[in-house]
Amino acid sequence: EADIYQTPRYLVIGTGKKITLECSQTMGHDKMYWYQQDPGMELHLIHYSYGVNSTEKGDLSSESTVSRIRTEHFPLTLESARPSHTSQYLCASSEGGHQPQHFGDGTRLSIL
Amino acid sequence: GDSVTQMEGPVTLSEEAFLTINCTYTATGYPSLFWYVQYPGEGLQLLLKATKADDKGSNKGFEATYRKETTSFHLEKGSVQVSDSAVYFCAQNRDDKIIFGKGTRLHILP
Image (cartoon, rainbow over all chains, first blue to last red; front, side):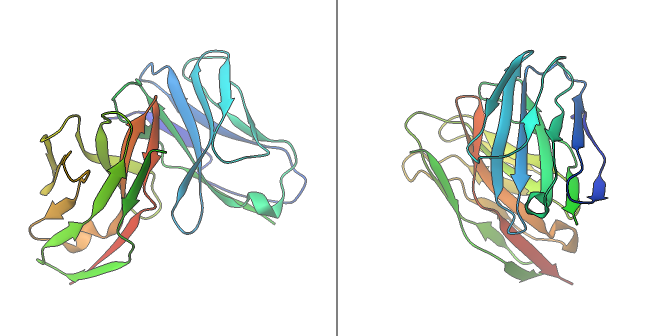
């Protein structure tokens, strides 16, 4: 069973606030990913990391930033939240290669 | 480029009906193929996978066969239950990333 955790599960917050979404995994996976999922269900890759001190932007441009200081931890930060950031954010990790990604339960973010 | 196309939903079936959700892919190499399921309020869970041509993935009564000649990976289940109501994503891997289809919402009526 995959062990990847996201906090908070739900967040409602006002415009202009700084937000950090947490993602941790206990599987020792080098590769981690952040997706944004719109109400129409489609998943968009916004950031990924292939190891400590490695971060890359994904296919969808995002105003968020990420860091990877420890293997198990891959937080996502929004410096100044806006209503357009309202969405569900999913974190995933993988061994890479032909192995599947394992997902957390997501953070549903609402910016007022 | 590489892509995954799956049938649009929503798909609505009665309990115990036969399910097929079509999925086709385009790829330059030989990817692994996956089906993920997302229940309401949760993240994605791996449902089944196949790593090479003619492999059959199966789990919880669901099956899908990796068909290289038709570049397809259709999801099937012989008798669906209300608890199968969810969103299903077909996917392939490419260079340590995964390409997802747009998802198919399935509703099962009692």
